[in-house]
Image (cartoon, rainbow, N blue to C red; front, side):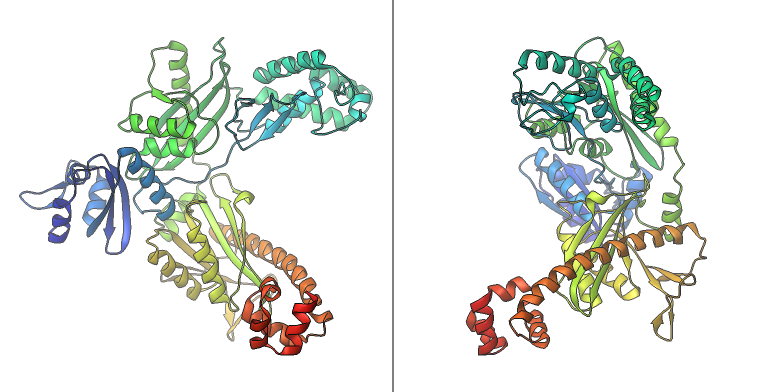
Length: 589
């Protein structure tokens, strides 16, 4: 490895905190943080008898270093600032060798606002920094059934706002605090409901009695609903029957790894009981997996004061400082000698091992191996656009989690586009998506509805922004220069890098990509129709003024949308059309 410019760059590094970046030509390979940039980067190399990768490093790091042609760095004021910058760059740029953070699900809480005169329980995914709002959770499953059971067993105020007693009072499901002064009685009911929220199984006898009564009265639909509630409560972490007999909240965090993957389990303990189990599995690459997993688990929601782990990792102290700043209270990441907590750590570790060994979803591995992707494609984004003769141009992005095999509709995006051809529309949409990576992090894979030209466009945009992201395009077979779309016999072609793939119609990989493309197409079409209806309404305003369609189209081509036409000055309109049309618009709209 005789790279004299890289050697000089290493020798010129400062003895200060910061973030370093390894490149292969213009391709970003790795982002790392350091308390001391010079010492950290030098540890990757040996300088005699020849300059090269340090053989004491892992095979992954040696492979990374052997590909590195140059490095760049950014100094920061502290190690904590370096940690934050490192994670921001990983999230936005997706370096090839970094362990990657993903935007996983935000889990719901049950909350109660104690400042209300008659507080009620609600489901929320947003946590506010308010001492009068109490949160329980997060729950990974069954939260709606749990809340329904609480309202069935305890006659709490059922509706957010009501001014007089309603049907819930008539069926003994509410004591009508909207009409009667029942503060003391309501307070006792609320205490019972909160006690049941801490230990849901105490509701089972009440629920079973109600289910039997509904069944006896042949109200089987209501009986079935209660049966589902009972089943959900019985299944809440049924394999983790732990009661610490003390009212404390904390988390337990365990990590296990193999050559291919790293798995973690987070146990959430509320009031001495395990209420949720969150499992995570990521690809084992290079870097500090401990902080990466902490960032993924605590990106939102309540952060407990104590997080117990089996071993203290190198970055535990700086991670604790980061989480403390985020939570606005002291967060301790520590080991313990407490026997009950040690049992929980072992339990979490066993769960993580099960997650690590789970190979049910091998389509992830199939996709990666078939195309030789840089990343395991857990999170996929798919793009399509729709328009009618250049009008109401809409771009659509849908999101799919291949780990859970679910479309993530919270991450869907619609783009109102100004360009009037497919190439520029896709370019406009992808540029806007790249700019939003700091808000919604970079996925593992893009799928583009289009051919080789649009694939090259996507790859060029990513390269310009130093983003390491795999892109697959899917296009229809062309006969006589026209896309072949005959029902039942359409043949799709897949494109990746410089290769074309013509898979059999029953191939699992092709069917998955077709399913994702079709959802993006559906989402684009449905939103185009909505946009077109709005555009037609706006167009009709101009038509009613006696302005011809040709002149309306001329104005649209210049301004891009109707709002800008309406906002344009009289002088501007004169330049585009004529005095008659300018007068009509400014005098009537």
